Image (cartoon, rainbow over all chains, first blue to last red; front, side):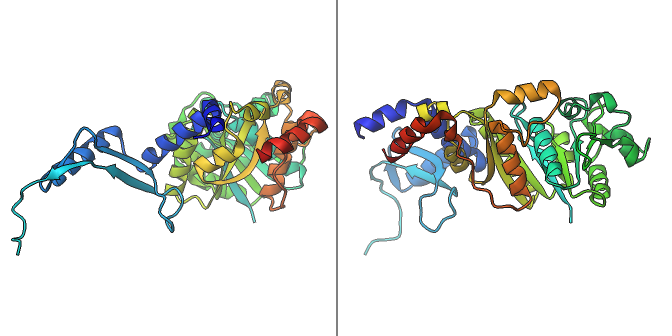
Length: 95
Length: 264
């Protein structure tokens, strides 16, 4: 981040724009914080079956998709799930 | 071929009624036959903004309920021979009319008018549903504030869900001095957030208050807002008018300054 960006960030116009962008993406997807919490818990439940995840460091949110070819503004579920280690599971038998 | 346009916003106080009055008057000035309909039953205001409050005999609910003929309720604006107003009822509420009745009323007016402009009440309840029922296209009015933009986004979603054929955005009450300071979202910011076609931006203009005080729409006058509204009217009729440069108010040197600012 350059010095210029630092000053620019302070402008209330940019603050408003950033706040709105985040808010509207989740509102458009009709995804309330409660639903997000439920999704988060379910994701943890599923992944924990196979991997040991850091539930504290887990971050999920709905943002705009930045995948090329998607319609601009298409909501995307972003999840950052830190993995602590492998869990011993009864998966398919190894050779 | 007539067109039914609803002016809506979600949030109250962003300038729906002012926009309706000025766009309606402007379209009439440009030669089209226009009827303005106030659909805000219980809180009518378009009549007073138009300066026609003393001429109301019958209203929209009277027409719907068959207490009078359409012709009796329409107020002809003596200043513009092409312009009429169908006022709203003040002593009733939104449930007095259904979307089906509104659709029928609007279709009846299509025979006589080129443009039918519906001034929508604030909110997303029955009054909104009534106003959008018979409309071909929508003008969504917003101001560069978080609350107004959030509501506009919701309204745009609802319009799309109701299969509105055309949705255009009007950014009202923009203050270029604040935009330059970075303390107001720019027109580009608003368009970027809402991802909808912009049909015009109207600068914040003291003359609007004066014109509302007098009950005379200022569209077409030399004032910045008057010019902006006339440009919107021309775009509605299909004329290709470039977006106004709102920076010109500051004179030559501020324009030079803004040239340099844009580069940085």
